[in-house]
Image 1 (cartoon, protein in one colour):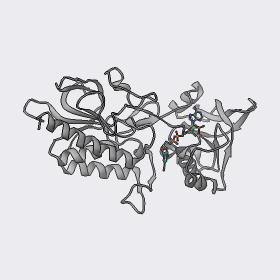
Image 2: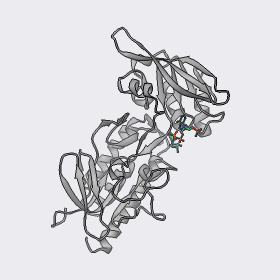
Image 3: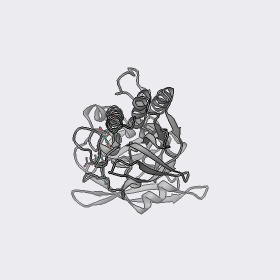
Image 4: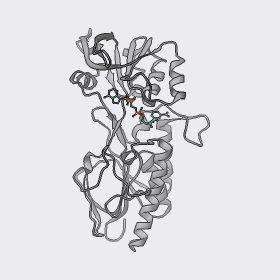
Length: 334
Ligand code: NAP
């Protein structure tokens, strides 16, 4: 922190973007502070470290030829950021007041504190989408066998040797379904079109499994439940609607995993005047991390509706730290 009690750089979020920004900012002697957030259900699990905390094997991040578990990778990022003097705070930033007149930005924390920073890097990532059915959300909240994270929940005894379903046709759906084939007796992928969006390699990996099938042109319109021997409500079946014929059918499953994309974590900055694109992601100015506020930068999935990879998020974190450093230098603040 500078003499005036204003931080040089506050980084909000602790995924690959946030930690990379911290590594660069710390090595530039900017004394960055990272607000890593508080674990929560929203409605699915949201953890410090972000989506990689819910990922088993990361096989496409250069430097890890054998692959690495997502949480282990995030622990390494954090250790590297701390090695250069990053301060880590286990709180959320709940609201912000950004200024465009060169005065510091004001941030409020979940711990009830108000802090100020000359530069802010927003790297809060994105969270899983849900279909939006009342029955889906009720069962998800109550541990009734509906989840948006197979990697977190798929190995639970309730799904072992059972028939489960995955909704979605992208890489996430393929990854989740492939993971589930290890535990479940059968995995049905429910996709709303007749063609998968996922990359060929991910499709092939899944389709090579004997216990996986794809149900084409189907959407889930309801989740049906039963009460188990302990009095808890559990999923029994999903009601499917054919997108071509409108015909409805029931598929008996003991688990439903929703993998239909993500929404950027921007709720806490909605009313700040920050500009968002039509998909709700932070709108970056040209090929940099600059937003419409001076000294406010964005990096990673919160500002990237397209690539959303650990490596691209890390690259954006690097850009944001360099942009923040240049900004502070240009303003004579460092
Ligand atoms: P995505 O690529 O946006 O795919 C979302 C899928 O969900 C699409 O198939 C979409 O159907 C379907 N969908 C969306 N809304 C739906 C709804 N309301 N009801 C039913 N289906 C719905 O999202 P993603 O799979 O999460 O992947 C996001 C990014 O992360 C991608 O860039 C992906 O490559 C990357 N990723 C990479 C890996 C990996 O390489 N290991 C793993 C996971 C994700 P339509 O196809 O009809 O639009």
